[in-house]
Length: 164
Image (tube, rainbow, N blue to C red; front, side, top):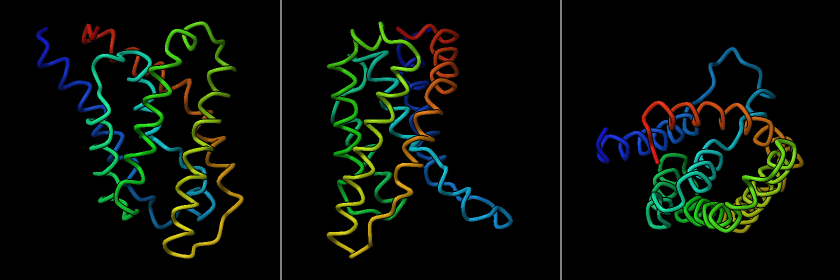
């Protein structure tokens, strides 16, 4: 397969992550289920940052985050800066993450996601006066627990398209 198709596969996983982030739950689902939604873009960007650190640049991740800001309605630049920080952490920790156990990977993703959610909550409080919510921790735990299944699915996508 040529490099264009491989690049399109990576781009399509980022677009799917954006769509899942923006998607709404059906009306019949209780409100508390929405609190358990993971931060999909954090997971996808961190995966590609540790698997292909040379493929995805900070500008591309920043633009994806800015597009998520526009789609979700957050302050412009919030998700872009957070996703760029997550990708930068993934690039710096890439040799170490390969040696981590699954529990350590989940703990790392939890800590990063908690930091991202706290930054988003701080900016939302600063700009809109929205009070802090303790459910941020539940969201970070849910994101950490989704890391292993998403890692395996994206690993199969990477292997089936021979992405290197």
